[in-house]
Image (cartoon, rainbow, N blue to C red; front, side):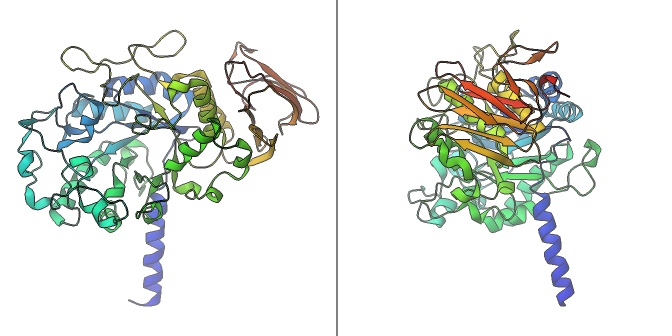
Length: 496
């Protein structure tokens, strides 16, 4: 191979890697929401009736592959696959295909949570949600089929300073597949390709940290391009984002994975939670992003909490601390760093709590209240006004930088996004009262946190920007929300 051929191969590889970090959002859409444990038909309705009209870019859906049935039906049974059939409590294969089609038509992309690091743990008389059975003690999964030859030798993960132990042993007793074997790779690639065929835009790779990067590179390289029948450009690659928990103290690093796909940036949520919980100060976030040791922005999927960290991690903000949580989510959606993902939860009181279900274990879907919030035991953070309006802020401010940073030396901060938007956050225990430069053109703007623009009237607070671009910003400590946000697309009068 001559130098020109080497160069062309290198350029092709770089192009493919960059393509795997393209979300393929429809223009005018932004922000991903994780509709955790929702049924396929209900997701389709949500795309058509709410997510599409509100401008959401995509949905992360729960695993679609058949999982083992566990007593009391805890949420985590979805992460114990028994086969690669599309049969779960969320619905059938046909219902999944219909959901993907309808969401794409509504301008909302679908990203599937895929589980191929492992299969189930040991279960006596294991039976799956699609009728498959398995002899789990002997690593025999006829629904794939897999046998003992396809797995690593059974051993517990007990040393996170040893990359081999983390990647070759069993996570929480779940039987660990050997992705270096061609047969295993073939089964995984076939599973991923069938998902691509029906029109999804990409996938979240569960437990990527527990697989060798070189094996994942091979698997991703063999996956098909996206299906152009679903309005993807010819040659478009699936968006890949990989679960790699890295707080900086273990043998395995997130930087081993970001050269060939995006990575979940777990430090994002913990750092923001720490600041709003009084363990750090918001003033330090003026250089938020890579300077903090976070991944490059284009490589990072960012979030405040996810389905794991909201359980058993008391330092992480969740819906249960709603005022601080809304402030954190508003900051995430206002700041340009990373690909923002919003958690949409069901209410829970214990780690193992199951999603809302009937007496025989069928999922009960959320009902929608008159104020757009959810009932039936679902939290639906994405339907909170303070959240969906900030998705619109993110769309309005797309492709602009952080400008005009202001702080009071502690926990009151404000910044603009070019001349498109302005946000202020009061994380202190006293009132925020300041005249600040917003960068917006003169006019009267609706605060999208406290209300909406309806019939050309703001239902919440208003902010008047003067001829110099300055405005009086007030966030009282006893207000419902500790944040205020305005942007150029929500105003009821612009001075000419």
